Amino acid sequence: MPSPLPAATAVSEQPRSCPYTIRNLWFHYPASHPALHRAVPWVIQDLSLDVRSGEILGVLGPNGSGKSSLVKILAGLLRPQRGAIQMFGADLSQLTPRDRARRIAVVFQDAPITFPMTIRELVLRGRYPHRSETGLFSGWGWESVQDHEIVRQSMDEVEIAHLADRPLHSISAGERQRAYLARALAQRTPVLILDEPTAYLDVHHQVACFRILHRLQLARKQTIVIVTHDLHLAGHLCDRILLLSHGLTAALGPPHEVLQADRLESVFHCRVRVLVEPHPLTSRPMVTAYPDLRMETGSQSPP
Ligand SMILES: Nc1ncnc2c1ncn2[C@@H]1O[C@H](COP(=O)(O)OP(=O)(O)OP(=O)(O)O)[C@@H](O)[C@H]1O
Image 1 (cartoon, rainbow, N blue to C red):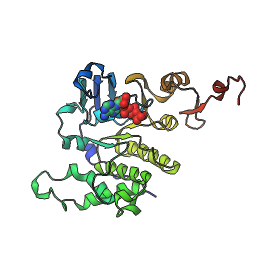
Image 2: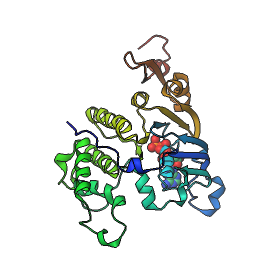
Image 3: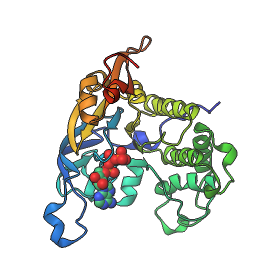
Image 4: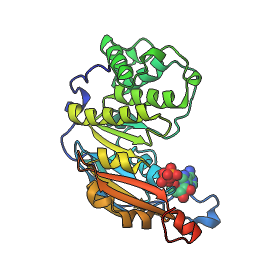
């Protein structure tokens, strides 16, 4: 059993205002050649959004709709060409990388393996933004007993403590995804951003991941932005959902408002039938997408 979440540390030290205030955001990637500049498409178009303190915001949309780009913008890794992003009342672009790392932990879709390290060393990196700024403790050996305790708890949370001394490159994709999640947990930031955190996880760990996020929200009041393709789990976990379509906001609101069958079919542009029903126990929307084989065969009767 994972150990219970410890009391908030860094979270409670942060200002209590809105985690993100986003106004009229426009973003495109640079052109591959200056002559092509005018032809570069906008990836995010006129996005305005307040991310509320302590909410779980799901970001959904088809492939290429701009979800990962938005995550990178929110993490301060990409700069929008137009618009404003305030984080806890400060201009995001003015924050130093260290300030950002104390406020935002990010788990990317396919986190790279940079150089050889163990799982424990990876998770310990989550404590880097909190180490002393004086040069004295800037190298290896700076970490405190509390840092090691937080690392242990974070590994327990995602059930990877038994892998602590294994090299990062020697574990499976799903185990690696959980290791990066543990690093983000160890960072103890008020905001957690996750890009498809369950992509490589089996059903046990998918459910465990969503349970952890729910507990983080309750116990640490963390604000969580999660990109996912799992409409069903998003319907259960998220307080609000931002649905993107070609970089535009197709819908923003609580799951029962956003997850409407006709809207999903039109945004995902695919020949599927989408069933949305309230869960009998939670009343949260359950989304099932399945191929409409009648469309393929021209048959009117169910296959
Ligand atoms: N580094 C890049 N340079 C140029 N264009 C890019 C780059 N990364 C993404 N794009 C383009 O930006 C658009 C949005 O991509 P993004 O990765 O944000 O979409 P996504 O919604 O996360 O997709 P997916 O569901 O497939 O992960 C796509 O058209 C993509 O081809």
